[in-house]
Length: 285
Image (cartoon, rainbow, N blue to C red; front, side):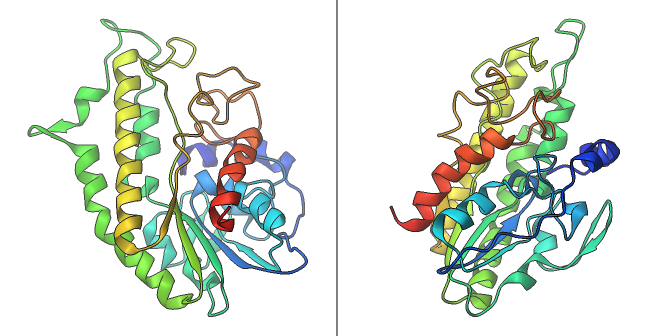
């Protein structure tokens, strides 16, 4: 989801890199995973080659799903910083350019997961902006910065994304006509009222972050339904595993991670938790 955080931690991350090839299982599905860093798993061990600039983990939920379902072919092209444009055009990363993600699809693809859209509307930058080391009245709330002419700018941007997702679903279907396609939502990033100062987002802003992500996930679910594809909800199962949760419980790290992961991104525990949701959804269980 984020380019700025990834750039800042490139040198730290390099020590965690392992030369790991994409997973291949014995037989079954031809599975393609598309998406941004919420799917790729930046800094979660082990980071894989090729396309190291995408900060893709061999323990992200797509890799875990591929192993669990016995995929005979697995192509994970998820990439940190990706937005819907990068489905169609080469994406520049910190370490070079990568091909359009839709190029990974083929006529024999049987399963596709796609988690995309957060970067189109700048949700990670929004969360970074709500960092508040000093509570009001010294520190300034962020939520009122996004109301322009009486309209919530995040909701306006979210609604503007709807036709792009409809088109993307159709384009995935055109390239992979046999595939079961699933749009994947985003996790829970804040509990009601947050947990200031442990995660320094003041209560009103935490509730705004929460409501904004809920609205965004509803939009994804609605567009998936309109396009006739599946939707996998990660928000509900991650309740209680947000950045405010204890280090041994949370699935998404706070501003200062305690586990190898980018801030406000899934850690390894979170990827396992998300895989536990994705696996039965794509298997029809």
